[in-house]
Length: 122
Image (cartoon, rainbow, N blue to C red; front, side, top):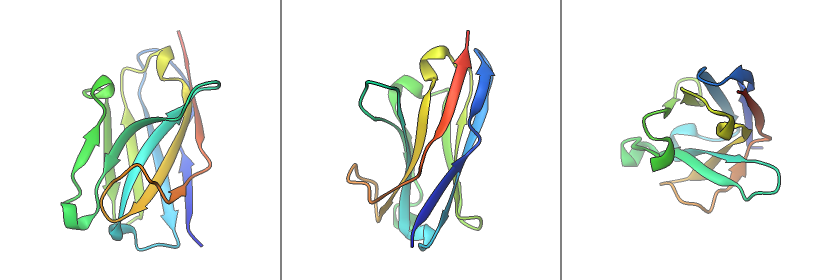
């Protein structure tokens, strides 16, 4: 049974940093591309970043609007993917979801975490 468990969310002030973690179990982690999405109430889930699997050299990608502030990384020894978020603004407030896809990254995600709430006060 595959499980993705996010952690690290919380309440921060604008300008602060936060690092989200997603611990994966029940899968061979290096065979999966991992990603982060976010969602605010009333809006569609938004793609944030991805990091590829071993046969794509674990290449990472962050959407342009967050590039320079957000960084995705993975620790295959710990079966964990991270999202480092810097210079947070109230617009970054959302529920952040971890996602896994076997093979190289694509939007047809196979597994989701339960989400972790990020709140940013101005």
